[in-house]
Image (cartoon, rainbow, N blue to C red; front, top):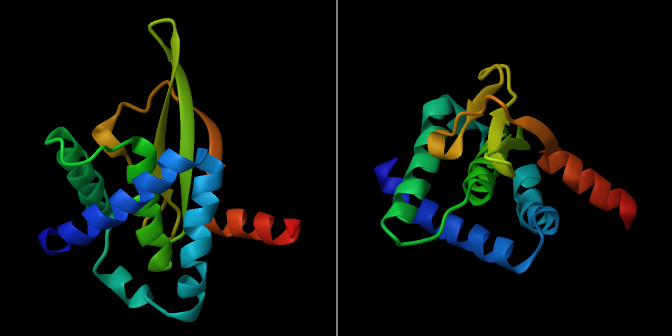
Length: 154
């Protein structure tokens, strides 16, 4: 993982910049439209032999660690999208789940990734290791679904 830190930092910075410019749903579609041709044309699935749930969690942890050192600004959305980008690139199906819960008389939200392949049997990648109990899923975002919906709308 350490050898990839610079790339993860770069990817996260780009994702974060897009999220700051657009609503989440629009940013999500823009990001995945930009890599979709690459995921279709090239087969990066060999890397899945070397990738497991802990690798993706390390990515989230690195992003949050960089945030705590004030190098960058992380959010559960940006960290989740980076993980989902890498999972998608390597042919690992995943959903970004946006959940909400009531806390201290407020509604709070959190995003996490559910890896959905047989290899992972729906493993959760949780930015910030937030306690997910009490969160109700509000929306699920999937790259293939987002691209399909966009394609049928044009």
